[in-house]
Image 1 (cartoon, rainbow, N blue to C red):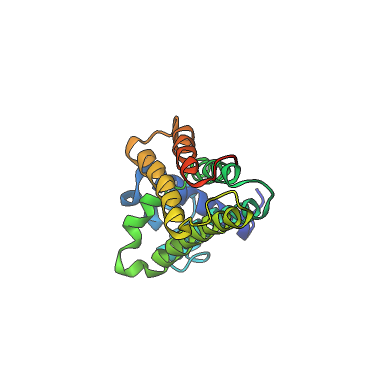
Image 2: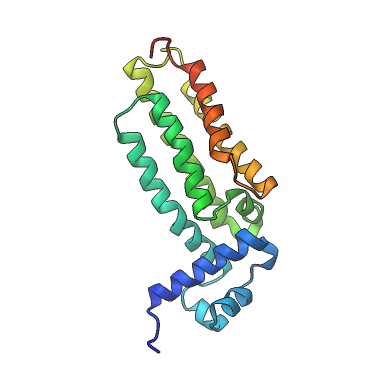
Length: 199
C-alpha cells in the first residue's frame, strides 16, 4: 500500500479530532485517542502538530478560513440589507453544522490558561463576523435602505446575538432541525425594525 502524503495524513488527523470533539466532547480528545482512531502513533501526530493546542488551531483554520472567504464575498456582493442578513444566517449556520464545528464547545477549552492562542483565534473570528455585519449595515445606511440614525454597532451586536442564540440552542438540543429557519425568522423580525419603510 502506498504511503499517504503529509497533507492527506494531516487532513485525517484534523477530521478525526473534529469528530471526537463534536460527538464526544473535549473530555475524550487526547493525542492518544486521535492517534488510535487514525491508526498511527502519537509521535506521528507530533510530526504535524507540536501539541494539542496547535492541533486545535489547525482544526479551526481548516473550518474558519473558507468561512471567512464566504463572508467576504457576501459583504461585497450586490443586494439589499434584508437579503444579505438572511443569507448570512444561512451561510454561517450551514457552515458550522455541515462541518460539525460548534464554537460553544471550543470556548470552554479556550479559557484554560494554556490555550491562549486558541482563545485569540476564536476571538479573532468572532470579531471578523462582527466587522462583516457592520460593513453590511453601513452599506445599507449609506444606500438609504436603513434609517440614517441607525446605531450600527448595537445593531451588529443584535445580529451576532441572533446567530449565537441559534448555536447555543443547537448545543443544548444536540439537534439542528429547524435551526436555520428559526434564526432566519428572528433575523427578518430584526430587519423590519431597522429598514426604512418602502425598502
